Figure 1 (spheres, rainbow, N blue to C red):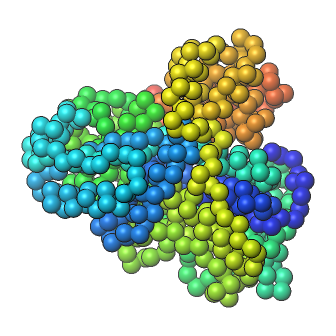
Figure 2: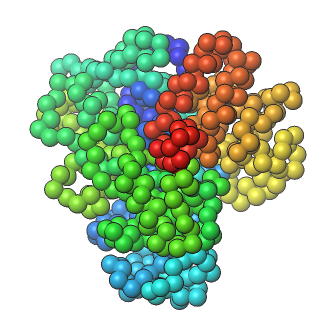
Figure 3: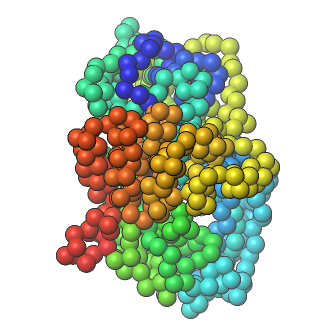
Length: 550
């Protein structure tokens, strides 16, 4: 996570890809005592992890496809994340309205709810409730009443800042002596005598070459898995990844906006989509379409934005959402298995830990295909278990199911801790709430570095982010660029103006505290604003268009 050359060049394990799955694997392996190198050609969590619907859920829809085991695994992992990261993962009520003509009628929904509760027998969240018309409108008074038959209310969980979940896994891996290197692109997977020998590549920010050796390499690059494999001598008969694109829009609170999240069947294609209270706004999505474009620049298409607006207005008629109400959009590619003949929604969401030796590749090379935000920890445990098995080492049990993440605190202690922080901190209440949401139990440590009024000053009025977070992001959390600071450390980049304004303020703070010169500060702002244009932010829309998403 720094630009310095690695202190070590030999490791037990190299992990390529620092999204939620790669960061989880690095943490699991490091906690077991393995020496680990975690590499990514971007920042921690800057790919698919940043583009999800930000739910920690059991996969209610997977029941339709008979993936009972995946649902059970997801529900078990949801419960674990609620305990090891209560500052980032919180319970979320969801309402499923049922209308005449829906593909999924009352009997099917009720059966799904019963199965969901049965499979989550060890949960701490409330059981589902079936509601009549009047009951359905209580948490969602703006629901269209024509054809409304009732609703089901159940609970899952939300990870407001999925980027922080990935980051805390990487930080904990680093605490346990893993090397974490961002903006390090792997250009070649090295092998000799039929065995993996390591990787080589370059630092994209400095141009410096690097080489690292290890008997095991796990390719967990998400949608980029096949690109990483091009740097091996293995010839694949077909791609491993056949990802589909999902797009979301972010809007301000609107007339008729639900108090709880809505899980709604789209009229256009019967695919469920979400309308979720999130980050003081509403997150609406997602689509599910085949994608073969540029993986490094994925953007929501015009028709996707229109589709999400139209479906929301259908379910909540008084919303009246139009293009000018879209603050920004975002899109990403799910790293699903290559199944060209399957309908997008039916492609399995199960993960696969592929041993390339079984298909004629070098021994010690593994690839991860698929995987969900919810089940990253279980995936990591399985992958590291396989490394131990293949290495013929005595198995060291995984510790991640019960070990708190760095900002975590035992859930029963969290309310008192939060109240004390809000009572004692020398910053505005909005800033204190922000620090707790982003840093959890580490918020007092960060505040201890805010030793001057300037460092306690607010740099983003939307989130309440303070100046001290800028040097903290670089010195404590491995940020290397302004985009890292804004989009994946302070989380100001997820505000309604995608961090525009906060970016310039953070660059000024970096000049004062990190030694950036004027040229670098200006360049970092330019690069960040160009990067964020893929989100079609309203704040950067040309004034002449009058469009909220162009």
